[in-house]
Length: 97
Image (tube, rainbow, N blue to C red; front, side):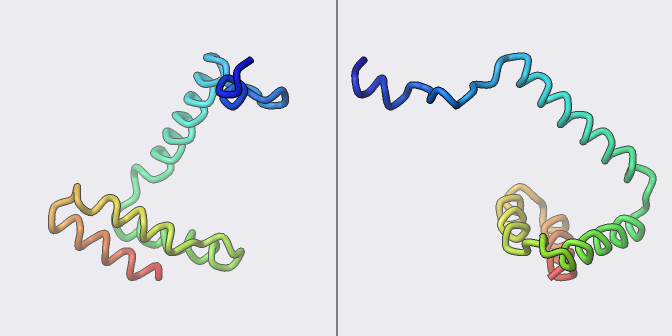
């Protein structure tokens, strides 16, 4: 075996995902998305904001809240938003700070 082949060869203890495992992961992700949608679909804007602030508070209490990560995600999204959407998102970002 050439060194270049060795470098790219999977390690013995590494397991490559099979096609079925990838499908299963996608199905799980889709199921989580559907569950989240069903949880929030009937909430109005005020209810959604209250839920967001509640989740942020819980994350801050248990030490899992990462403002910088959220801010980075927002900065990635803003070029794709119109001015009103951008202002709304930045306002929400300030509220959870």
